[in-house]
Image (cartoon, rainbow, N blue to C red; front, side, top):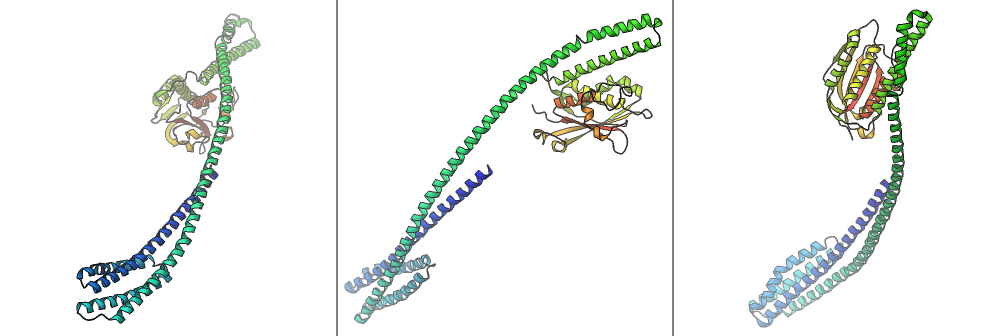
Length: 455
């Protein structure tokens, strides 16, 4: 595109220069015509002066002096115009100087002759002869002046014709170049459209595969919620019945095994419940965005976690939160998971403190933001806790499903909570990142929710 535009600009500039040269050559030819016409006007004016004098000398009537008087008035204007038109030609200016001298002498003779006739004195034939000689010299110089301009006119006309031919050639070149690049553009456009159609076909195939995968996921969710939970409930029920009815007959080892069965069943139940939540969150078919007040979502999350907050004697400090477009149940789940995570990994010797702040940032300030979101505004909601924290090397690993940094005997959980948080942020065209606190122990989870959702 850049090369094409550069070439078109260059060829257009050449064509423009040729057109400008043609206009300049045409102006020079017209100028030469004007000089020749003005030279003829000067000679005709002198002839009219001489004709008026001759008529007065013959008829002795004042009426014959009118052409003489009119031409005398016009003469100065014609001389000035001719000199102005020829100001750039040194040789022609010299001829004009000579003409001015001869014209002045001729006028002096004419004025003297007319004055003698008016005074009734006889005509000076010698002066008349001098006047004829001056007139002859004026004609000769005017002819040489015109011959010079005619030669110049021929030269300039040839240059004008050449400039016209060049202009036509460059205009033709411009047209051919434009047509060639236009054809190239259409060819490139065709290739690009063909490529995009190919990619679109591949994308449609991938979407179909994704649709099939989503269907399988829904079937899995159905199986998990019905077929898997049914035998699990029986394991839990019979395990509880065995504990109540046969506990006295079991030795310590039997009781330990029964306890492990019960704990495993509970963990299996929790895994199934978390997977169901995750699959529900991953399914975007029923996604419905609406205006939600994050303050209300946070209040609901704290209400659901009230027992744990009270048990841990935790303090949650938050400022004002904005209103965004999103899905209520997912945002509530997001807040629940982040607060639960902070409470779970709190220190044993320090009361949990969770600070929730909000600020606005531009998309370009977020790591890994997409091109469409680069100029978007995001609400950055930070969850800052004073817990045990984590190593910065695991900042991404903690968002992978089933990935845990601690043993289950130390901290309970399935490893799905933070993965679910990232899934929720993906559904909302947002981002979530974690980082350890630098000055003290604890962790910071930054949630970026877009101010404007792109559908």
